[in-house]
Length: 265
Image (cartoon, rainbow, N blue to C red; front, side, top):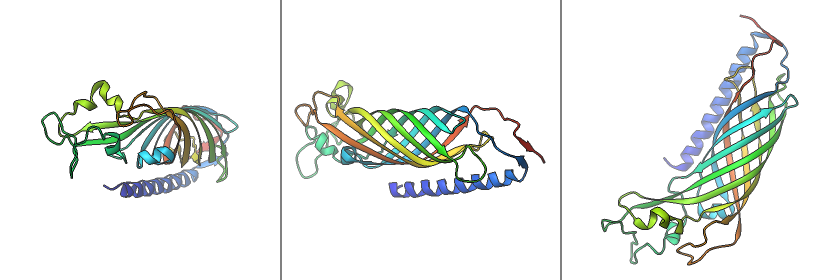
């Protein structure tokens, strides 16, 4: 399936799920009297999204998938403090693989990387990213009477590492195994900051807590390897990497139900 189709499916799924949740909340509200109050609670959250890279990262990779796990706390004043672990990965999305592996390709009209059996090794490449961030955000209620839900603005600060993974699909390539693979992986690492803008819904029902929005992060990364085969040396340049992610997530708070509302059937 093409990446464009995957992106469209994600958008449709996001819209349908949001409509379904809002309809469910309206249905439940008909059985409830009283007012919601502000909630303070620790939580776990899981999210997924599709990332468009820009800057130096955009020169190396096409778009890729993004998954995150958060541990945090939502205060009575609608502040959110959380620690976010991110894992990003693509699929055969390296733009200049032949340049990075130039020393391994044969010459001729159709260059290949020769595997251990003397045939085309069928090498593919993709990115692998790891990120760790601390986020401080604020929820601004705007819809209905729920004081715990609304527009969210969160600022991030942390670190990012990304690199290229090579995989021989048809035959082994010893030059891309063991310590030799570090001669080609372009591993980068550096500090990162960012901004999340979206909507977060927090309900007293533990299964109806979700968020959706745009997550933008910028990192200043530098190569960790002292030698890359195609460069015949290292690279001390500090690069600027951007990641723009459409994200949707589910939040699992650890609160118990308070008695500020009366449920009837």
